[in-house]
Amino acid sequence: MATISAPHRHLLGIASLATEEIEALLETADGFVDLNRRSDKKLALLRGLTQINLFFESSTRTRTSFELAGKRLGADVVNMSVGASAIKKGETLIDTAMTLNAMHPDVLVVRHHDSGAVALLARHVRCAVINAGDGTHEHPTQALLDALTIRRRRGRIAGLTVAICGDIAHSRVARSNILLLTRLGARVRLVAPPTLLPPGMGPQYGVELFHDMRAGLEGADIVMMLRLQSERMQGSFVPSLREYFRFFGLTWEKLASARPDALIMHPGPMNRGVEIDGVVADDIDRSAILDQVEMGVAVRMACLDHLTRHLREAA
Ligand code: ASP
Image 1 (cartoon, helix red, strand yellow):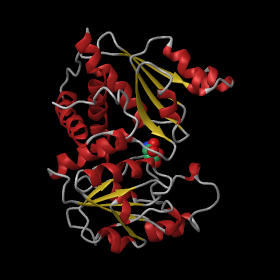
Image 2 (tube, helix red, strand yellow):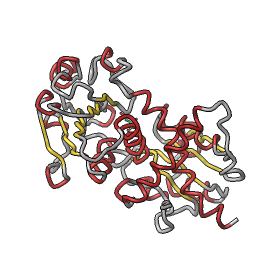
Image 3 (cartoon, protein in one colour):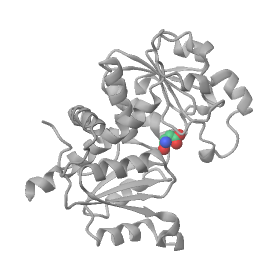
Image 4 (cartoon, protein in one colour):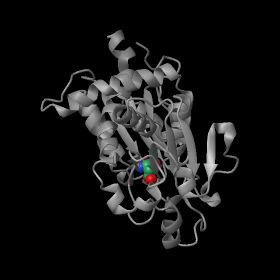
């Protein structure tokens, strides 16, 4: 079976994964979903290995699920809190990387507010590095867990119409999903006001652009909503939150133009009443938002498993 091959060593983005590697990760993750539903969830695949989670940006879902993933596979997992570390005292990213490297971790899971920072750090350590989100660049494990969610709920990805809606300009989730979903044969639409689309985005990326929710959702199989990421905005991108909700917030009324069984997704954290109406998000038949959280643990287990296989083979 394909695994993440030696030249990568790291998981920095969907862009650097081959299609077979994506398929292999999804296949492995699918197996871990069943394990995670059992009362005894523990394997010894990563026994003796050390995983450090280094988060320069806050996170609930991603950090917890990487921690659970590592522990369920038997690794020793350390969470480094940046707020209480030497980084706060002015240490550079490279010094931090070298310091951690000297402690011989086997996997570093890194989230950073700057695009490209995780790749930079990866060049200075000997272990595998997983990008848990870098700036507005990529969030590969989110796209993988979204793909697994879609595959399990719809049985396939190829041929489906996926509408990614909202703050695409500031979203690493959108970027990774565009790369992954187009690669696996989905038709991807981006639905956003012009101010929230990255400059230069268009058909050359294999996507269709819409500035109107009803038109963009017409016949969609999957409606993926994104958070309005105010913390990444310099200046104002929408007239007001009320107006944004009125034109771009997902309501039953706007969803009526999608397929009757269209699946609703959101990577979290959600801003209810801004990009999505709470009653839509909570509909247990239509919303896959909690499935996404569940798939997150399985996908991260698969990534840890694949990236450490060469260590186990060498032992
Ligand atoms: N949790 C996702 C991320 O880290 C999405 C978000 O923050 O809105 O990119």
